[in-house]
Image (cartoon, rainbow, N blue to C red; front, side, top):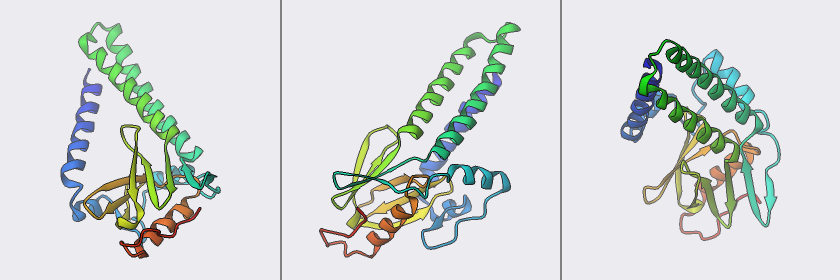
Length: 209
């Protein structure tokens, strides 16, 4: 089944390019990334529509619990992610069904199970995503659905990633990708900017509670 094979090929190629070339500032800027204090790259018309829907809910107040400020993904990005991934899965499913009816599916049908697994993982990630600011640290949901902690006082740079994430760089070489489409995005943005202004040796940087 050519469609699925090409999809997995494109995903693998994109992943390798992101890992290898993503370290280059020039490469990231060509893809639309901008520094935090620069105007984001101009989006295409269809991308602007997606951005408008995904941004629904970013103005809500983030959750506060036990001195933790919790930024959860907006319902807008959840619905966009679910709709787009479901449409893609549906089209692939039709291709699988057509091949099965014509007797051409073979072992390629198992690739569809991989596509279903990716669909489940992606939507679970988007629906459960959250980033937390607590005790001077940023706690982010990782791609493996775990939690990783970063000292805000060690933040040295962040930029608008073209994929809808903030790309954060910390002293020591650690990097994090924080989803921009979260409830209370402006509060999160201000916290990151304030962290850049802090003395890296200050143990108690200021951040919103």
